[in-house]
Image 1 (cartoon, one colour):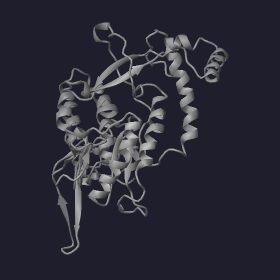
Image 2: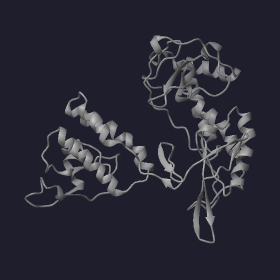
Image 3: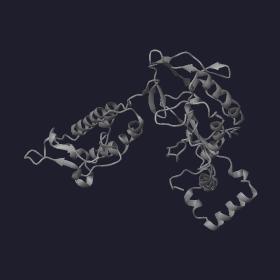
Image 4: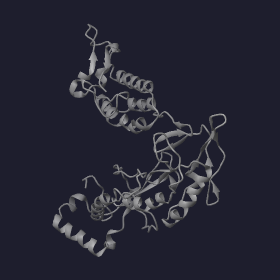
Length: 375
C-alpha cells in the first residue's frame, strides 16, 4: 500500500504496519479466512463527506468516503486481487465501472468526528473490497435485463440493451413497451439488493422511425413509469451529462472547457513563471483529457485551443510574436517548454526532430515554417 494512504480511526499508519513481519501478517489473515470472521474492533471506520460540486448544500450533493484501519484495508486488498482474477470472466461485459480510486485530500471538520453511525445497506467507498462486492451484486441486475429487448447500434451484430458504468446504467430498447418491460424485470432484483431507481436523476427520450417519409421523428412524450411515477422525458435540444460528457438526444456535444477563464486565473496566481508552465502542462491541460478523448471534436476546435494556449504563454513570458510553435510544444530535453498540444495529443511531448523546419533564413522565427509531420 502507498505510504501516502491515510490512517484509520485506530491511528495505525502504513509505516507502522509495515514493521510487522510478513509472516505474522500471513498467519493473521489466514486465520481470518479460516474462521470467516474479522474482529469487531477493526470493522469501525472514519467516514468523511466529499462535495460532488462547488455549491453543495444537501446530503445528496456529498459523497461519503470511509477510511477503515490499515490492517483491514490491506486484508481486503489481498481478497480483492484474488477475487478480480476469479470474476474476470463471470461479470457482465457491459459493466465498465470501477477503476482504482484517485487520491483525495481530506480534512476533519473542526478536528472532530461525529457519533458512530451504523449503516444498514451499501458498501463503504474507499475500501479495496467494496468495488468487487458492488459489481457482484449489480451483476444480478444486469442479467435480469431480457436479452430479447434492445436495439441494433451501428457496427454491432447483436442488439444492445444496456451499458453500465458502476451504478450509472443506460437501458436501450426498440420500443416504449420494451423499455417499460426492462424496468419491470429489473425492479424486483433492485429491491432484493437494497437499491432503487432515483426518479429525479433518471431521464428518457425516444426517436421514432417514419417509414413513409423516411425520417426520424423525436418524441418528447413521457412513456415510462417506475413505481407508478413517470420518468421525465427530454426535449430534443435539452442537454444532459453522462460520465462527464455533454449530450443532447441528438448526440454528443463539443466539450465546454472554459479554457480562457482558467488561464486568466493561472495568469493572476502568485506563482513564478516556471511554476505556471508546470501547472499548465501537468495539471490544467491534462484535466481536459477525458472530455477531449470522448467528447465531440473537430480539428479546427483543437487548433483554436492551441492558439489560445500559446498566446497565453507568449503574453506572461513576454515572448516575441515570431516565437516558433516548436518552442512551445517540444520536450524540455529538446529545448522546448514541454506544453502539450491539444491538437496532437496530451499524452506525449513531441521531440524537436518531429517538427519540420523549412530551410530558409527565416526558419528559426517564422511561424509558417513549422509543421507537424509525425502522428
